Image 1: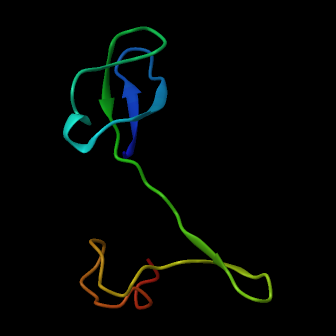
Image 2: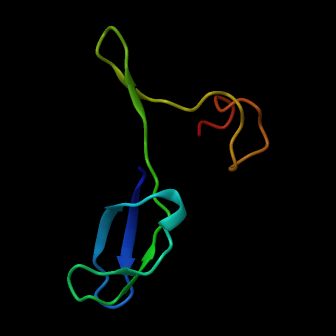
Length: 78
């Protein structure tokens, strides 16, 4: 079950809920003030550590991304 991030329209509390995909946008109430909350666009980062302990950002699988038209993420650094 996916974890979704929500923000209260009234008190601006940001919180997470486990919801099934089909129910992600159903009426969600803020746990603090019990008013309406909306699902946020969540972002994430992925990192990898090499054998020497150096940490680097993982750029993706090389299939392109929405930020550019390249077919290889090493081109744009995303």
